[in-house]
Structure formats: C-alpha cells, structure tokens
Amino acid sequence: MRPLKNPCEVAVIGAGVSGLCAARHAARLGCLVTLFEAGALYGGLLATIDEVDGLAVPGKFSGQDLAMYLLEEARKAAVRVVECGVAGIGLDARLTLTDQEGATHHPEAIVIASGASLRKLGVPGEEDLAGRGVSRCATCDGGFFRGQDVVVIGGGDAAVQEALILARTSRRVIMVCRSALKAKRDYIEKLAARENVSFIWDSEVSAILGKEGVRAVRLRNVKDGASSEVECAGVFPFIGATPNTEFAPASLRGPSGHIATGPSLAASDARVFAAGAVRAQYGGNAIQAMAEGVAAAEAAARLLLHSSPH
Image 1: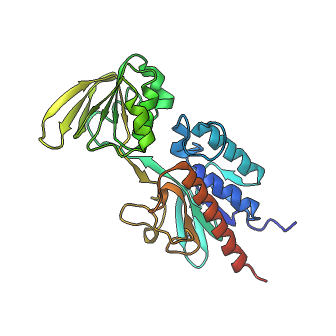
Image 2 (image 1 turned 90 degrees about the vertical axis):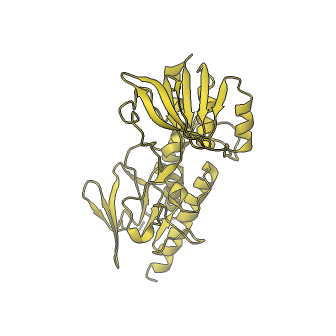
Image 3 (image 1 turned 180 degrees about the horizontal axis):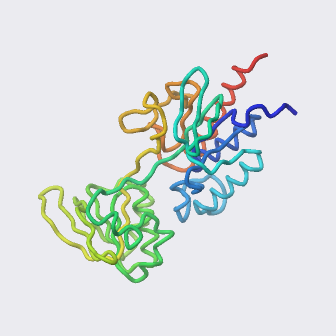
C-alpha cells in the first residue's frame, strides 16, 4: 500500500448524482478522493424527485433512494466525505481549494459537480411565504395541500413532474406558463391525462398574496399586460436553475455562470473538470449527469497518471 500523502488527490465538489458518481469512480480508479458537500443534501435537486426517469436499470427509484445508494457506494470505495462547502479555488502552479471552514487543500485535479439551485421568481411575497405555501418540492410538501388548489409555475420537465405529483392529492393543479410546454413528450402526455390539471398560458406571476399563508397569485399576461388573480393554497415555482459556481474563479465561468468544457470535460484550466448542471453543455437528465461524473473522473485519473513521476 502506498503512503497516504495527500487524501485529496482529486477533489469533487458537490454530492449530487454527478458528483457522487465522479467520486466513486475516481476512487475505484485508484485516486485518493475527497468529496465536498455544502448542505448535506445528497443527490441535489434530484433528491426531491419522486421517480427518476430514464435510468437503464430495472425497477423504479426515487431521487433520494438513488442518492443514498450512490453515497454508500462512494464510501465503500474509500471516498472521504466532507460535509462542508467550498469557499474558493486558486489556479496557481499548485491548485488550492479552500473550504468554508477555512481549511486549505491542494488537489491535483478538481471535479466541479456542484449542481444548480432553482431560480427564484423575485416577486413580492415569495420570500415572506416560503415554507408557508411557497415550496419547491412536491414530494416533500404536496401532502400539505391535499384537496386544495395549487399553482405550478413553469413549463419544463421539472415543473411538469411536480404537477404530476401534486395532481395525485390536490383538488386542482393550475400551471402558469409563459410559453408552450418544453417538457418531454411522455411527461406532457401523462399530464394531459390528468383531469384536474389546467393551464394559464402567456402569463407570469407578479406577486404571491397572503399573510399567514398563500391566498392567491397575481398574474400578468405577457402579451397584453392584463392583470388577474388566481386563488390557491400553494405555489410551486420551477422556472429554471442557476449553476452553483460562485466559488469558482471567474476565468472558468461564462456569462451565465456555467463552466464551459471541452470533449474531455476539462475547463479552461486543464486540471479542472465540470460535470452535470454546472456545465454549459449539460443536457438536463439524470443519466447524463451520472455519465458525465464518470467521464470527468476518468479524465482526472488520466491527468494524475500522466503527471506522476515515473
């Protein structure tokens, strides 16, 4: 056995499915891996999904079940898990990673897989009523609105998935969409089969109304500017996500905050790789996130092999 000189040969930032797959695979390739997770929410946004779609394996998995399985597998592979976020990365001759507790690490390669956070509406009432009717997890909070009317904002995969979950228990699910649905066809077909789902098109939420809890949403028609109100007990905004890359050097980030990579998933600094929702070219599904984590780990391991003295 080789001496444990640097327990952080490869640093993986983020314990979503992409980061968990990257950490496990890099460890299985012989690298000494440290996995940093800021919020101890293993699985990232996927952990809130009731059933993960598109996995080429038998059976059905919730996002949380999948994340817990991958975490256990990573630990079995001797990945060191640090429940602490990353404050910054230095791209000098020797890489430097500073965590949020002030500790300094010197990895030889970094895989950024820190995922994304759901974008906020930025309207009155959103912050005040968070946890009191405003939610971003139907799996977690849908039961609180049993037999009541709820509003889902957005038209992508995540919004439609949330609407499908809420439709099981809510009296009525109203989807507020600025434009046509952008979700996968099979999601849309499932939604069309639900009689308690309705749509308000060409509209956006301008305010969330209520005091102790959500009472209604105020809408604005994006075509004619007309205002209206829709009564509801819950609001679930899913209008896209923002990459969690605030700790990354500006030289790695594009205007949107995403990290651009080449075919090997290397960023502009060849010692740094990106996988999953932080990556500019990411396609947005779980199986791709997992595959990118494995690919980034392969590339990081190759880098270490080529840079090691012979």
